[in-house]
Image (cartoon, rainbow, N blue to C red; front, side):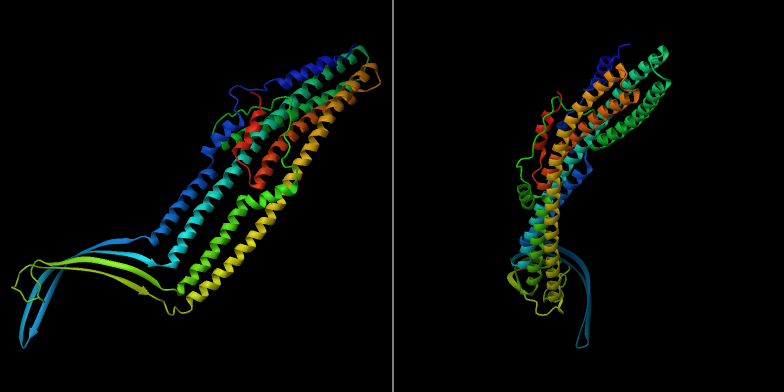
Length: 448
């Protein structure tokens, strides 16, 4: 009896192609747009950036004019005794004044404004870092779904191939060309493939739920990679170039540098506690006595009104504050040293992470090339074992092992390709150069 290995391979290829492009499939850019408007971390960072800008505007208020309106009404009683003659009366007093001031020299307020502007810029840098993290998280979830879908399809293709081998072993046993052992081995491998299929189905379900939660949609269907797959290479192809880029523009490094600058400004503000402040102050007010003013010689009960206005410069120079200013300076200097140490630590961490990301991509590219060669070798080995089983020089378990090796290699190859694509994004994130335009070349690799 001729071994129908052509039929087995045709069935496997058909199963691999089955469901390759689901209906209503979304591209990576489409899901990124959804995630950007739904992701809680991104929304939080955007709100923080708005709050930091508002805080900076609050700090600027310390350099702008201040204007206030004051008004009051009171009931007063007066009892006067002069040379044994006493008089008592009660009267109403209405007061109103407009008071304004303009800081002329307040160094601490100007430093606070500079700090507020830097805090607003810092929040924008944090937002950029959050957006970069969203790109990586979305891409990882996207390719996790594709990898889980590939695993399920490979397991189903393996199961179909094992089923073919099981039927062939049964027919050979019936005609006396094989022992019962071949059928039992094929049955055991078929049962194992069934268990793997159940696990793969559950893994795909979980990965899809994770992607749905990230983008705020239900039933997302990522578009798979189109064949042939040509993976991009990291540019530049130098680890030191990537490290230099990371230490120059990584969001965490920029944040630490800005934190150090803010700490330096805090020290200057603490030292400004010894300096004088100069304000321009002006006021205009009016007092009314509807029932008369007893302190003014006038007819009893005559209405009285007085208007006062003034303008001047006020100097305030602290001379001694119980060593509070000196201790505050010491505190800010220590915090400045802490910020400098934090910056050193961040630069080293980012440098190490960038090197690891670069070498991870290089290793992944090498692994993909090796697995591509292994796939071809495994296919050749499967065909040889099937032919050897037909002529009697190979046993059934050899064919089953060759089938398992082929489909496992294909699964590992698909996973390695996805890891390289995500690794390239992680490398750009580590260098601080990642933005949504880096998704465009990957999006063009997807099936239309």
